[in-house]
Image (cartoon, rainbow, N blue to C red):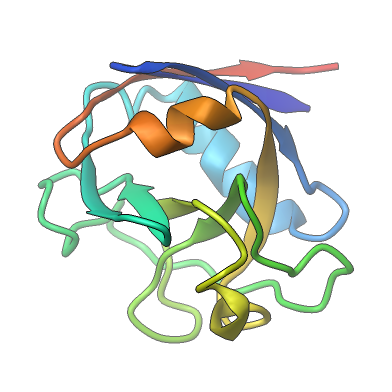
Length: 144
């Protein structure tokens, strides 16, 4: 299964880590299909680190109204360029906010602390073009 994340700067195609993080993928897919992410912004952009979105109030404090457990035991729990991972305020507090890594340089401390649930396989150049306030126009789920 894949997702096309349409942003103000272009599209990113994501391949999900369904085997490593099945519940996290299912949560992201459900929110995407429900239109939860449509029109939200990348509220946090830290150069050479991450772009973060999925907060309904645009501050980094909002979520879907529930929390999901972290899934940290899979083989792909390694943060590198293009990896999608769940943002949280502590273990098992994630919900809708996610981030995409700019590179491996500043992300090793995130490994097995934040759930990696996919990777951008096309449109990786878009990651570096996103600035704070850019919109997630729509996330389309592509089922195989």
